[in-house]
Length: 89
Ligand code: HEC
Image 1 (cartoon, helix red, strand yellow):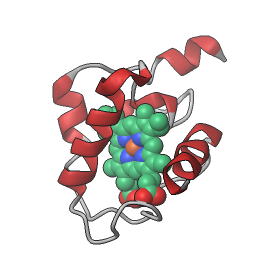
Image 2 (cartoon, helix red, strand yellow; image 1 turned 45 degrees about the horizontal axis):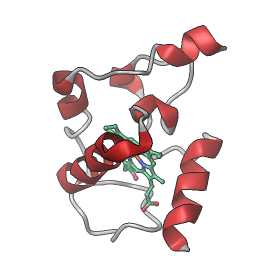
Image 3 (cartoon, protein in one colour; image 1 turned 60 degrees about the horizontal axis):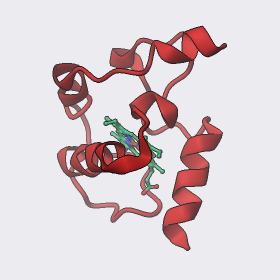
Image 4 (tube, protein in one colour; image 1 turned 180 degrees about the horizontal axis):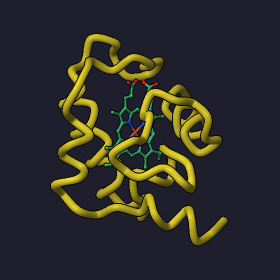
């Protein structure tokens, strides 16, 4: 589990930028729903960079899913749900 989890610990800015491509965000409950995907990823990068000390894969994706294929709208990860609750408090 720990090994697979590490696969999503991506710090490559180009890969992260690619997460910005595509449709509007589909599953925003805390952030304003009309934010562009670009803005959401900028906020995400800020979150990641600002001392949480984690990467995108901490809240998104699954052990066997390559970064390119992560479904960022999925609420499967407990860490994402927890992060959302923290923002609503
Ligand atoms: C600390 C946990 C956490 C980390 C780390 C994190 N995210 Fe998120 N992400 C969230 C939460 C929570 C939401 C949902 C926000 C909401 O409900 O308004 C979200 C939503 C998103 C969405 C919108 C998905 C959709 O279609 O609704 C994208 C895209 C996204 N994140 C990309 C990233 C990228 C890229 C990174 C790494 C740079 C990252 N996230 C790191 C918690 C995280």
